[in-house]
Amino acid sequence: MTNTVGPRAVFGVIVPSTNTVVEHDYWTAAVPGISYRTGSMHIARPTMDSDRDFEALLGQIRSSLDTAVRDVLTAAPDRMVMGMSAETFWGGVEGNAAFERRLREATRLPVTTGAGSCRAALRALGCERLAVFSPYQPVADREVGRFFTEAGFHVASITGLRCRTATDIAKVGPDRIRETVMSLDSPDVEAIVQVGTNLSFVAQADALEAELGKPVIAINAATLWHALREHGFSDQVEGAGVLLRHH
Image (tube, rainbow, N blue to C red):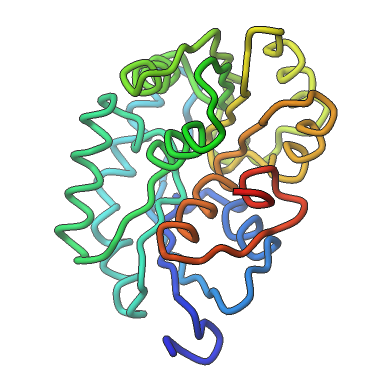
């Protein structure tokens, strides 16, 4: 037994301090016996309304990541889950691999990242042609596209919502998201992938899957799925998409 509220596992979750969605999504999934200890990367300047500002935001994430990980480790978690997206896609496949290696070496724990989870999810679903949307600026969307391309997928299109601040991501409503998804969908797209963990999308993705008849992957559902399955848990979760329901 890990502890009384997480007898099966405690997952350490790292999020930007501006993020209000990841913890909500994980707890809403309500996987019995799994608990979460969240650590925040301090974002003092949340502006991201240009490529330059977005890269500055990443700089804040990088400079505060070690402290967030340090704090989470005091709770003795069983796995580290990166509740952030952009940094895990940066540098393509090798950039993601280097990021994961660094965290495994620092924590001596298994690691789940957004980029790695999306790759595993697409492979589990048998999808090769995808469309992607994000809350990002072009500089980050290029890195997301690079990762998926290097991982062997065909990226039909990427749409960035160009949110002005990191907190604005959580304010994007379902109407705008639906409009974006519909603009990305086409007969040759096998799956639609959402990145940007502060974008509230898990429940809406589940509904859109039923409507479109194809996988719609919300990154928070993908990271939770990856963490559970890699940790040996086969729990099926309703209302969070086909991954957690059937895979």
